[in-house]
Amino acid sequence: MTRSYARSPEMNMPFHGAKLALLTPHHLVTLLRDEHPGLAHPGCWDLPGGGREGPESPVACALRETREELGLELDPAVVIWGRRFVWHGLGFWFFAARIEARVLREIVFGDEGQGWAAMTPRLFYAHPKVIAHFKDRLRICLTDLEGEEKPPADVSGGR
Image (cartoon, rainbow, N blue to C red; front, side, top):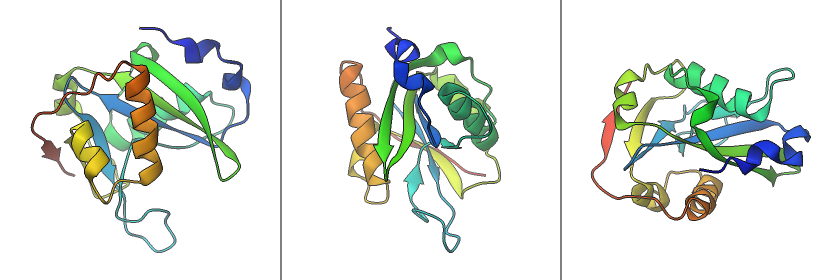
């Protein structure tokens, strides 16, 4: 798998945050956001990730947020795809990583959000409470990765 994003000059451009689509052979890991007043996209399904801290790189940001939100310590080598997007005038990175399905059993949900679930890409695209621009970004990602999405059943996990 090519990691052309790593050589992209955009890796050195300013960015505000990063998200990570954790892809198993049949699912991706999602997080249900809190419903606090003033929170963007309250009660919606999201992906691991968040805001940049200090001088960290885009990949380091996505992996740190994944560790904080899901308790997963991932090697940067699992990140197989990335692209910088501009949203409301700010740069954001969207990455994808391949993980084995067994890694889902290692998730230790953090203290942000209401829970997590492993969804098929098909359910992610169709779900009315998934943040819309992440549906578009996942489609771009999976298309670039040659449409490797695979359907079957959904499994869920909680706090």
